[in-house]
Length: 158
Length: 249
Image (cartoon, rainbow over all chains, first blue to last red; front, side, top):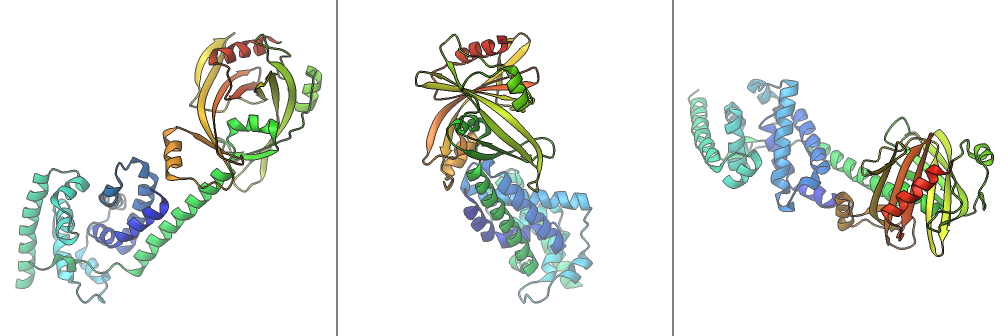
């Protein structure tokens, strides 16, 4: 794969990369650094990619690793109040309450929920990205959905 | 349940800019690498090309502050008969073993001088040296013996094939694809380079593929390298010739 094809593919998944990074790192600046690093690593290791069709899921996998690494190294914690303050408000469809509810989910469930419901990945694709069996993906989806519902209901009550 | 797609805001402009910066950096680096490849003369092939045409090439050194190796040579021989050790010492600062005629019939045909410069990242000359390239001919066949007053480069693709009088002799063979300076690398070329199918070098008018053999050893502070292109000589023949060079003094 040449650099032009790689670039085009990266630009196609720009939004997905942002959302995936944002579901682990609340700070936009950290998201930018993690995505940048993931792109550089992805291109450097491109020769290990067996099929071009898997580039998107492969890059997302690298990105998730980079985000967790950054969170670990920088000891990033999810401060929901701070999240709310830094989030832009110009996006009319954007629902900060939903973001808060997602960020309250345990990280493993959160990533499955984001990949499935927000990014529209199929169970077998999530299996490939996260290296977990289909059954685990489905159980995390089920449990995550339930927790999310509970979070949202408690927010509405408040 | 609510539409979770609304859980995330639009990516900010700074995010988009960061991605663009990163991709531009990759594109620039790729272009730079391609340019270097086009200008690159394989250090191994350089020894042979040097005898035929004026060449200037670059190669990358692994150690020290030197990042680029520039070599130039002339097609005019410095010596047309075997010089004395004293002459060689005076001219090059070292006196390699020079065989007049090998037992397999290859005969001394001339000595060429390679001027080498080691450049740092800023392009400043850090080190200069002269290498000796000895041309041997046997009818239409030829082979080059290069002598350098420095240790063998750390070349991991060379295997020790013989030890003579306590000196290890290393050998490697590869297919070389020599391409014109303006040649555009294809995806297949990149795969071939990564897989080791071809070593690429640059400097010919058209694409040429050759079988290159290299035999090297380090003796008395001098690295000797036999290099043959599409040579009928076998690995064993080269080892025998190396023995003869080592026995000269």
